[in-house]
Length: 122
Image (tube, rainbow, N blue to C red; front, side, top):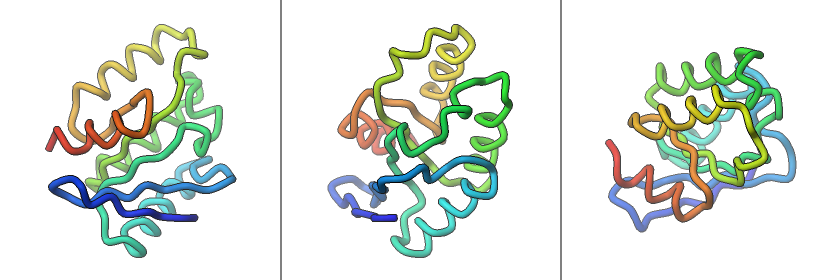
């Protein structure tokens, strides 16, 4: 896992990159949070949607709810960025909309928007 710290905001944000899936289930999400916090000191991260398993985006699996609840419980903020237009599920679109109106979890079209969302809301 490669972590670049973005300091151009009021709070540092970890930009996490890798060539593999980093979040596939609840234990890997917890590992992601603890690794990022330990290695970077950041409590916020931006992550490309390609680093999350595809079943996360099928709300009927329940995986997204379980994983994002952990992020909220541990007060770790995350912005997931990428092209979400390939998903036609109305429940997923509603889920993304509701998440973007909160303060912990965001979905963005690109890295810049993800950083902006994490910087703007507290």
